[in-house]
Image: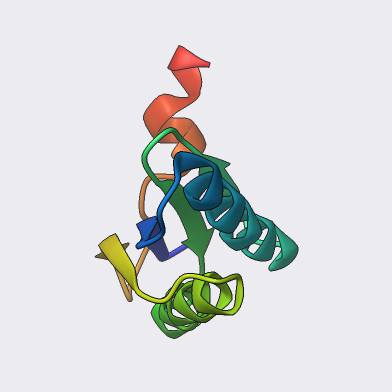
Length: 98
């Protein structure tokens, strides 16, 4: 694995219930990619072998949120990329806390 992103989606909608519904749709999309991911209370982390693939997923998360009813969505993305070699996995980073 050479890339990982953490993405937080914040749909601009009126109620907490609507935020949760839209974020649930985004998480379902991320899980449907088949990549290793970890859902946390503020963001979802996704592991992959291609920076381009992960950026495509991040872009699609915005589209999923707007298709689910968000008139505007903000995304906060953290990324690590090492084109030659490996990066720490989710399990290496937080496995001992699970």
